[in-house]
Image 1: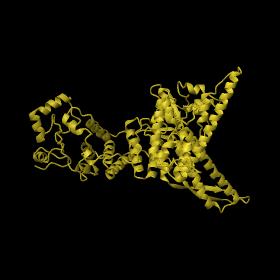
Image 2: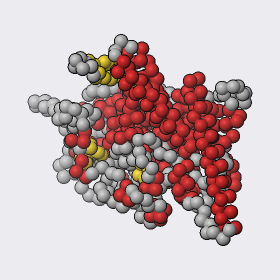
Image 3: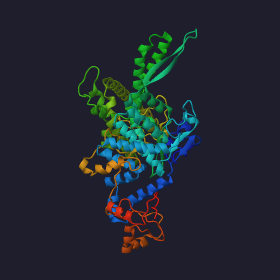
Image 4: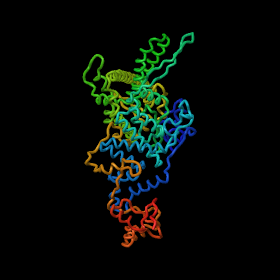
Length: 612
C-alpha cells in the first residue's frame, strides 16, 4: 500500500514551492524516503472456518433488521447482549475487545484487563513466530532486522485491524496503570508494523512512554590502554528510554507521510518536525548528559586519556541538548508559555538569574499573528496550523510533567534567552540590509529584496545530525516578525483526526447506573472452558436460531413459521422437512426442553438410543 510502493519517487506532485527552492542538493530534495520493496515482508491474518461462522453470527447480530424484537436486543448498544455473545463465543476477538472497553469505561479495570489479555492471547496464537517481537532473533544473532526485512501488516484488511486496536489498548491501559516500560515495548512493536503511516497515532505518545519509563540499561564501553596495550571494558548505566529517542530520531528511519485527499499532494516530514518529538529529543539528550555526569565519579580511577575522552563525550551531549532545545523553541515557540503555565512556574517575579517577564513576551507571537491574519493566509495554511496546534495540545496534556524539575526549568530559561538573543540579532541585521537596499535604490541601483524562502529556512534550523533540506518536507517558512511564530509541516495533518482523550492518563468513566450492565450476565462471559460455570441465558422474544444449511428463501421459511402445525412439530421436536434433524434450541425454557427430551423420537448427540 501507499507510501510503501514509492521506492524511488519524486517529491509531491504540484509542489511548486519545492521546485522553486531547489538548491545544490537536488537529489535530496526530490527523493521521498521510504522502505525499499526488497526489505518489505507483508503478513496478514485470515479467518478459520469456525471463526468465520462466529463472524457471520456477529455480523448478523449487528445488521439484523428483519426482526424488530431481535434488533432491539441484539444491538450492541446493549452491553448485556454483548456480554451474552461473549459468553456463547469466548474466543471471538472483536466482541472481547468491545466488552473489555465497556468494563474499562465503567471503572471495572480488573475484568476489563482479563478480557483484553484474552484477546491478545488469541492474536498471539494466530501470529507466526517471526511476526512476534524478537521473532528474528533466531535468524539474526545481532538483531539487525534489515537483513531479514521489515515485518509489516496492512491495517486496511479486516482481520488485521483488530490486532492494531488490541495492541493500542494494551499500550494505553499499561500507560494508565503506570507500567510505562510495558507501554513503550507495546508501542514500539505497534509502530514497527506500519511505521510510515502510523494508523493508530503511536508517535503522539511513544516519546512520553520512553521518557517516563526511567528504565536503566548497562552500556559496555571499551577503554583503550596506553602503549603497553593495556585496556579494559567499563559498564555504564544510561537511561534506556532517552537512548531510544535519540537513536530513533538520528537514524531517520521513521518519516511522516500524508497525501492530501483534495489536492492529491504528497507531504512528508521528519520525526523532529513533530512538536512532541522535537522537545522530547532535546530532553532525552539532556538526560543522557546527566547520565554521563553521574558516571564521571566512577571513572576517576582510569587514566587521563580516558577521562578526557569521556569528558568530551559529556560535553558533546550537553551541547547537542542545548542546540536541539534552541531549535525546538525557535520552531515551536507557542509551547513555552503553555508549558510554564501547566507546570505553574512563576513567570512574574524577576531575579539576577531568571527574568521571565523579559523573555516570555517574545514567544507570544502566535496569538498576535493569528489575530492579524499573517499566518493563516490560505486554506492549507489554516489546516496545517490547526493540526500543529492539535498536536501541541496532546503533547502538553501528558508530557508537561516531564518538564517540571527545577534544573529542567533553568535549562529551559537559558535556551529561551539564547533564542531571543538570536532572534533580535537577526531582526537587527535585516533592518540594516533594508536600509542599505533603500540607500542603493535612491542612488539608482537595483533594489533586490531578500528572498523570503531563504530567510524562512534560516529561521527554522535543523538538528545537528541532519542537513538543512526543509524544501523537500514542505516546511512553511516563518515570516520576519518582532515576535516568534510557530511553523508546522503540512504532513502533520495526518494526525488531525486523533482524539486527545485517547492519550490521557485515565479513561473518562461513566457512572454504573448509566450503563445497565447486569453482573450476573458478565460473570459467565468471564468464565472459560466447556460449561465453565456459565449459566443458560433466556433470550425471550427472540426466535430460535435456524441451521444455516436450510434451503429455501426467506419468504417460504416465514410462511412455515406461521403454520401452527409446523410450530407444534418444532415444539415437540419431531424434526424438520425432508427427513432433516430438528436441532433443539438450548436457550428454550427448561420445562420445554425437559418435555421434548421425554418424547420417544428425541435423541441426544453422542448418546446411543436405549435398547427396545
